[in-house]
Length: 304
Image (cartoon, rainbow, N blue to C red; front, side):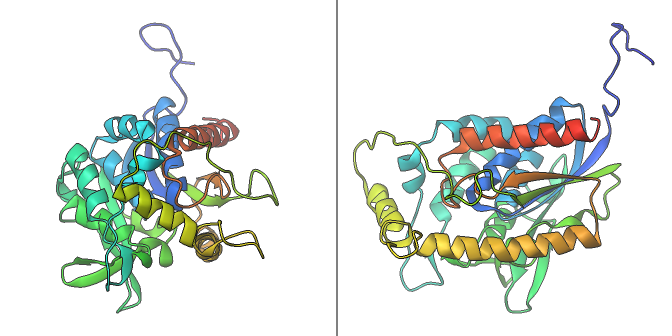
């Protein structure tokens, strides 16, 4: 076995180029930050990223070289901070415009054009008029990300080049095909619909936190959880938002399985689908840990 100058054997796959596919999964998407950290710790070079929905959000920020700064800010944010980023709209095709959320992240990351990024990046969205997926590989980064996470009914559609686009997870929850032009040695996909950690129990719940002073954002968030959450669902134990999320998850899981069967990646890293509720974006620290742990298990099993 060869060694480096210091006499330490290099990792067998160090420097190997990887195309990374990041899946749709709501707040579970934060687990993909831990996946990226685990891949980099093993010396793998991520040269191409494609993502849908929250996968596009994480992937775009990583491709822009700002993931460490974003992670640091993310783990400090509590429930009330996220709820204050919700900006409800009336009479439009969605509960929230998403402008406040995007603005807060753009202040940290900037808004480069995708073609200028050091890592090739594709955000996947869906054109409902034409009923097809759209690969966004040029233009302002946040236009692409905002379109990709526009969950129908929750966030308003986002116009790109005159086309009203919505969440890429509707048709491509695991956009493997978007990496086909990559020169990477390996394709690694992050499936957000892994077997539950606690079957058949309920999804994990966040610990309580200080409420602080109540603001408009807090009241909006409380309304969101009360009206769309689990508070008023005595018959079946879940509210409207969870019913919608589980239905969307079921659809996306089936599509993702088909995508992996048609175009199998060399490695699949699976995030348990009950890691959190889809809107629990304030649980970043534990979700990142889950992603890192799942990635390390998959890498160990594959001999990385």
